[in-house]
Image (cartoon, rainbow, N blue to C red; front, side):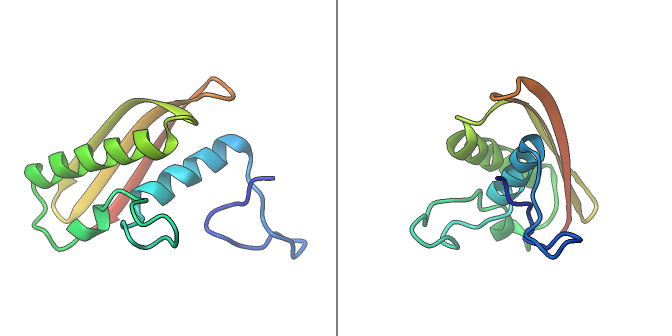
Length: 118
């Protein structure tokens, strides 16, 4: 059973579940948007992206985020997915992360776009 993220209840009042590919996408979001130190017993889990939230949005910030996110995804999810491409774009006050990957268990190519306003 794969719990849906964020945690919620389905129409029957039970814990919502997600398919495996959706669960992998949820895990990517958790790794990217968790700061190191937030997880009990895993103080180094996360990418540190949110620590840069007050930095001025620029191409340098995008490059820093891209490096940090790639390293975190490969470290924490390397046994679950093959990272194909990761691109970070800074446009005004919006930071967009586009990620292409292959889920190892299903061999399905997936992509996700994550956007945050800084």
